[in-house]
Length: 259
Image (tube, rainbow, N blue to C red; front, top):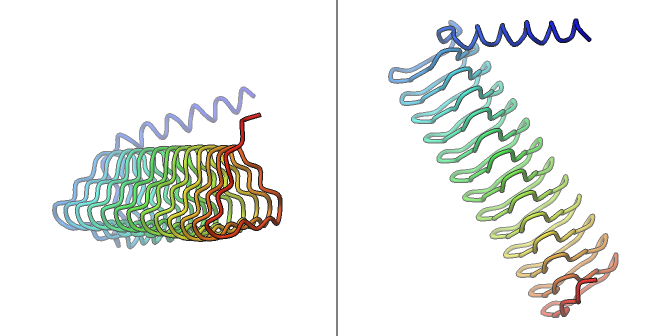
């Protein structure tokens, strides 16, 4: 135990020293004029940093990464190999972006966001603090992901979606355009929500739930495995929909009294 504590202290001391060193740029990297880099920055082989970019202290830019014009990268970030950061993007402090990701122009990643490998975040998207984007996920143009929410592996979130705080999307979930998912909702693996769907606070959609266009799901609703709701259906608060149930288009399921 004592040895582990000593190792941790030594590692911390090394990091402190590194953070106060001048920027270290690999010989094969290309840093254009007008780039500002603070102490402790490391730039890997064949990385490209375009004019007007700002890289703050302690950040690591890995091999082959591209930081485009006028982007701002905060303190102690990690930008993975072959990842691209688009023009005018803002990456706040301690964000971790893995290898081969694409962060498009005018995006905002707030502090301590994690983006895993091969994910794509499209223009003007906003990812709130502590959110996590899993591998090979897609977040569409102008979509917003709330604080401490999770976008699962291979998820597809289309344009103009609003995902609230502490929402969990498991793997292989599809959200159509303009979906709104409120705080604390859980959407399980394989679920497919078409456009203009609304899911209320703390609702739980089990595996392979299928909601057509303009469906509204109230708060504290439980949708069973492989349940279905047709276009324009409304499912009131506190309902429990059985596995495999089919709710026809335009049907209104009245709210239930909370138990």
